[in-house]
Figure (cartoon, rainbow, N blue to C red):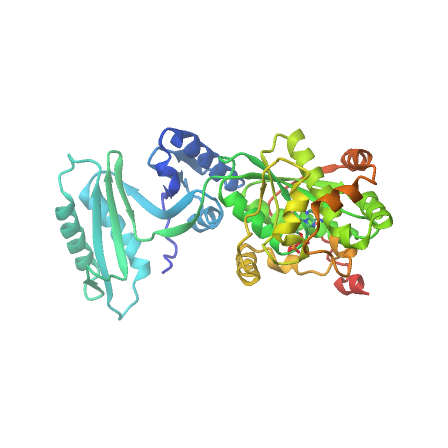
Length: 413
Ligand SMILES: Nc1ncnc2c1ncn2[C@@H]1O[C@H](COP(=O)(O)OP(=O)(O)OP(=O)(O)O)[C@@H](O)[C@H]1O
C-alpha cells in the first residue's frame, strides 16, 4: 500500500547474511555503507550511517521512493523500511503513527492492523506490552470505524522500535536483493559475450560479493560496432548492481582467422575457447583478479560439455567459475528478464563466436589432439598481440552505447 505525500525521516536497512560474519562484520558493513553511498550518488543531502546492527539512510528531505528504488539493487541488503523518528515520548510517537497510517486507509472500509513493539531502551516508561496496547488504542481512537485489531493476520503491522536515541516507526518491510556487498569477495574477470547467459552469470557473481571487470572478445570486421556496443550497454545495465564497471575489449580477429586457416574444423571451437580463457587468465593475473567467470551451463551447447571443459580449462590453473552451470535455459531467461538484460541480449548483432562457429563442433574433444593441433600455431605471439590491442572503458550504470538510429534489421541482411 502506498503512503502518499508522507515525508519519512530515514530508510532503515537490515543486513542479510552479513550479520553472521563474526570478526569480518565491520569490513562487510563498511563496504555495504560505501556501496549504498555510491548507489545514492546524485541524490542531495542524504547521509548513510553503517552501524553494526543496521544501516541508516537519513533522508534530510530527499524523496523516500527514489532512495528505495536504488536500494533494491544493492547486494547485502536483506530488507529495508521507510521510518519516521520521534523523541522518546509516547504522544509524539502516536502522532507519527497516525500520520503514517492515514494515507493507507480507505474511506468506508475497515482495515485490520496490529502494533508490534521492540525495546532496546529498557528504561523507557512503557514496556512492549503497554506500548502495543496504548499505541493500538490511540490508532483505534484516531481512525474510529476504519481500523480493527487482528493480531494473527493483519493487513498492516505497525512496527515500533524504542531505541536509545529515539522511537522509530514503520509499517512496511520491503525485501532487498540479499547476497553479499559487491567487493567483499575480491575481484574476478567476467567473460562477457552479448548473449543471454553471461550477463546473468555476472549478476549472480556480483550477488555473491565479487567485484567484476568485463572481458569481451570482438572480431572486426566480422563483428560490427553494434555488437561491441551491445556488450558495453549490457555492462551499463549490470553496473546498476555494482557501481561503475571496467570493460576490457580484446581484439580476437587475428586469432580466429589463424585458427580457421590452420586447424581442422572439428577443433576450431575448442581452440578458440582455449585462447579466450588464456587471455582472460592473463588479464586476471595482470589486474589482480582471483578467478575467471563465464556463462557456461552444462550441456547447453557443444563447448559446454564436461569433456570440452577438460580440454579448455587445460590452459590455466586460475579457477574458472560458472555461476549458471546448473541452470536450465528457461531459468536463466527468467533472471535475465528480471535484471533487465534480456531485451538487449536478444538483439541480433553477431558475436565473434557465432561468426566462426563450425557446423558441427566436437562435443568430446580429445585433449591430446587439441594440444597437438594448437602447437602448430604461434601461441605466444597471438596472445601477446591480442593483449597489446586491449582497450579499457569505465562504464557507468545506465550508460548507453547502441546507435538507436541504426536499423536492427540491417544487421540481418
Ligand atoms: N565474445 C565473447 N567475449 C567474451 N566472452 C565470451 C564471448 N563469447 C563467449 N564468451 C564466454 O563463453 C561462454 C560460452 O559462450 P557460448 O557462446 O558457447 O555460450 P552461450 O550459452 O551462448 O553464452 P552467452 O549466452 O553468455 O553468450 C559465454 O557465456 C561467455 O562467458
